[in-house]
Image (tube, rainbow over the protein chains, first blue to last red):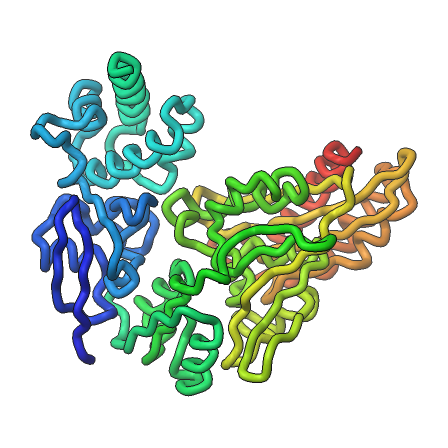
Length: 164
Length: 287
C-alpha cells in the first residue's frame, strides 16, 4: 500500500515523514522520530504507557493511526520539560516523591498527569485517581504517584500565584 | 498487532463520506474515535481496505436542543458528553454513563455515535438510548432517515444501518423536567465492559410512578428494551412487590453468555441487581 506524506508538530517542531496509513502513532514516534519516551506496553489501549498529548487531549498512541494525526500537534514526554531544560514540576515531583520504581509507566503517567492538571489545576486525591485510571503501574501501588501529582499541582499553583 | 493495509480518506462533508461508502461498499469502514475499530483491525477481525475518517466533518460535532429534542452529533466524544452542561441539566443519565465508560484517554477519542452505531453488545449507550426513546439519523445516497434505537440492533455487530449510510445524529426527546434516571453498571475494573448494567428512567406523580422505561446492557447479543419490566412499575408506588416483579421480568429476557465476567446465571442475577438499584436511585433522583 502506498505510503502517505504526513506532517505533524511534535514537541514544538514541524516534522514530516512518509508512512503507511496503518502505521500506529506510537510506532511513527518511536521508529521514525526516535522518540522512545512513550512506551509500548499492552498495545491494546489498556495500560496507558504510550500516552501522548494530541491536540490538547491525552490519547493512547497505540490506538491512533498516524494518518489520523496528520496535521496535529503532539506532545510526548520529551516535550514536557521547561524551555530552559529544567525538569517540569511533575517530573521533579515524581523524583522527589518516588513516584516510580521500574519507570516503564512513568512517561505515560506524567504525560497524562500534565493534561489532567491543565484541565483541573487543583484536583482532589479522588480526582487524581480517576484522572489517571487509564494508566497502569504494576510497581508502586499508585500511592506515591498520587502524592507526586498532588505536590506538582501545589508547586504549579504556587508559581502561578507568584507570577501574578 | 499491526492492522491490515488500507487507503485512508478524510472527507470534509457527510455527502463526501457517503460517496466513499457507496463507491467502496463493504471494503470501506467509517472511523470516528477508532477505539472499537482499531483494536478489531489489530486482531484482523476487521480488515477494511478503505478507512473513511470522519474527523474533519464539522457538522457531526456538538450538543444542542431543538424544539423538544436533544440533538447530539455523532462525533461528540464521551469526554464532551461528560462535560456538557446541557446534558447535566436535562439528560443527566448520559454524563453519568459516560463517566463509567473506559478511561480518560479512551473518552477523549471514543464518540457517542460510534458507541451506538457499531452494535457491540458491550457498549453502554445503546441501552440508554432505548430507555430514552432516542432515534438515530442515518444519511445515505438517497437522503436521510430516522431509525428508533429500539429497532436498530439486530444481532451482535448487526444493525439496521446500511453499508452506505452514516449515522449522523442521535435525537432524544427531552426527558420530562423532574424525571429520575439512573444507570447502574457492574464491571470488574476500569475499562471493562459490564458484567450487566441497567438504565432506568421514570417520572413520579404524587408518590406514584407515572411512566417508566428500563433497558439492559451486555446480557444478550443486543441491548434489551425491558418493556414488560417497566410496565410493572407504572401506576405503583414502587413498593417491594412492584420492584420484585420488574426485576423478575427483566431477568427473564436476558440471554447472557458465560464468559470471564461470570457464568450466564450469575450475569442474569447481576442484571436483576442492577435493575433494582437503578430503580431505587432513579426514584430518589425524581422530583
